[in-house]
Structures are given as structure tokens and as C-alpha cells.
Image (cartoon, rainbow, N blue to C red; front, side, top):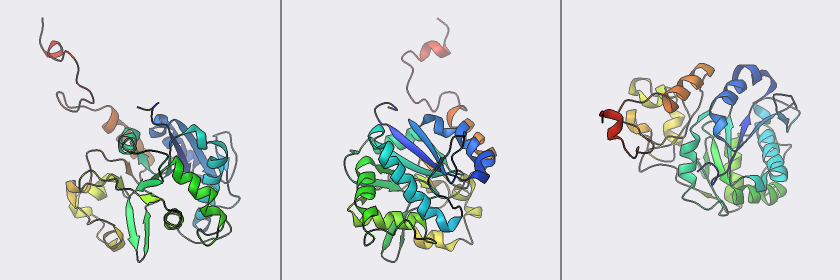
Length: 268
């Protein structure tokens, strides 16, 4: 499936995070991407690619634009889907492929944790989002070239995820439903804050008011095929890597069923 559904992952980072965050992303989940690009303000041997010359939250939109412009110029024909994540996001790539396998990358669509604010619908930048090849093409060749459709590269101080949502909507890109039934797959917080009702973001009322779908509390918060978690510490990167890819209760959790399972548990 990883060869049939090619996904380019680009990671938002900066020079101060390379040794504290980016190296741990590089050592864990991005190994399952077909192509990995770390976007920053400096070209380094890490490697990172400089797409801006300023850092800071006010310049995230400029960096996001620069990243997609770079991808459109050099990588558009090398992947089918294009996933953006932060350097504190953990992504389960197999579940990304499961989601997008139902869709045509030549159709204008993108996926993520859906939010809404007044008349603007967007997806969470921290939880990560994935665009079809057609969506990237429309974004960079149409939206970026018209300031009536998309803010210019010199614009500062505007949330990058909100602006990406506006740009894509203005060029006819559909926001897909990434849930399985009622269960969300992209998560803007760590597993504890999503799963444990007593710690469920009591002070973050914006989460409840902005979520596109009704918020499900406790275990119902999250799909069995969850895709991402945000605000993941370096230690938690490795914890998730172990819990998702190594630990198994015997008799449960087979991704594929062994053809002769009885010989595994009974002597001949």
C-alpha cells in the first residue's frame, strides 16, 4: 500500500527545534512516508530546506506558502498526497493511507481535523492535514497567484491553518470527512487530553466551540484508525511508536490473519 499510495510528508520546524524535536520525528513515524521534507528558515545538513528567512508565529503563513511552492516546483509529480505536520505531531501513516485510499488524488480534496469560525471552515494545522495532488496544484497555481483568493506571501500574523482553509475553499477544494462513523481521526492534543474525561481541556473552550462536529468525550473521542496527535513530546514519540507498532496482546490486533494460525498455538 505504501508504494501504491505515495505520500510526501513535510514537517514545519525551525533551527532551534532540530535537536530537541525534529530529530525525534525523523527517528519515528516519518520513516513510513515516501518522501520527507523538513521546512525551516535555514538550509542544513539535517537536512532542512529554507523556505523563509524569518521565524516566529507571525511568519507561519509565509513558511507554509513557501513550503507548498517548493513542493509544487520540485515534487508535485513524485507523490499522490501531501501531508503537513508540525515537529510535535505524531502521525500513523498506515491510517493516512487507509483514509485517502478511497479517493482520487486527481480530485480537489483535503483532510484534517475540521474547525469552523464564523464563515470560515478550516482544519487544525497542529493535528496535520493532507492534500490531494490536485488540491496542491490549485493552491499553488491559482490561489497563490490571486490576492483576492489567498493572502500574499508578505502577509504576517494570520493563522496558517485558517488561511490554507480559506485559500482552498476559494479554488473549489472540498474539505473531506476524515472520521470513521462519528469518531475523529486527526487530534489536536495528546492522547491523554483526548481520552481522559477528567483532563479534557476544561479551560480550552475554543475547542468545543470551533469543532466542526459535536465533540465526543472519553474513549469515543478517537477512532480505532486514528491518524495524528499534536503537542507530542519527544519521549511520547517513542512511547507511541512502541504502543502502535510493537506491543500486541496475544490473540488480538493482527493486521493480517496468519494463514495457519492453529499451528502457532498447538503442537503438531
